[in-house]
Length: 310
Image (tube, rainbow, N blue to C red; front, side, top):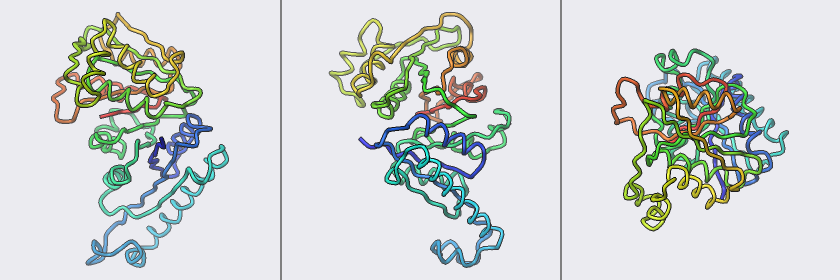
């Protein structure tokens, strides 16, 4: 089954890190397709500009915006050339540069949804993570609003093909595994470690199969979510059924510490994991004083790819 990945780029070093990550992870996989997207703010529009098509609007642009468009067209062409040099075919690549009338983040999200892409990839700028959340960068805005398309945030140059998947027995964490299984089902080099923290502040898993029926069906849930080790068994089963090799699936449980987010990051650093895959609850859920584990991981993570599902 083909997988379609939307890659938002702007020619920066952070975009190049995202391209490097994707080329490393998906080399030699012809069923993975990339759509390279670059957007330029339209600036102030002439009267009636909201009704103009793209071609008409181009004729009204200020010279500075025209130069930005030309620059981003060059960046996207370079991105396509980068993938071609790394063994991908022209059939796996599409590209688009256009004006953004409603804000960069909103236009990226619109493209991700209406293009029916399986994931959205962005590079994260190297400012402090707390400041990023407060200042409202494009990545922070997408993180806040993008709950229906898996969001991959690439921080730094990542080469490792090892995946760390934190589990807590919830529907959200199993959905993250389901997404991972779909994306990596025929990846020849990836390794996956399923991880649970029994830290003081971690949620205690209480798996109720009926909560999963709508997604995976009663028979599957009653079989795989009622095992003594269902916390690890069910995610492993999803991966195996998708075609991921059982011999490249591992699991680990941490029993010491207070904060599961710190245990996740510590494990990623110690064992050279390149990607952390996490499910998250919807934005309407009150996460309290300590926020969610995925939020805290995002605030502290460096030089790692983060896949946020949900």
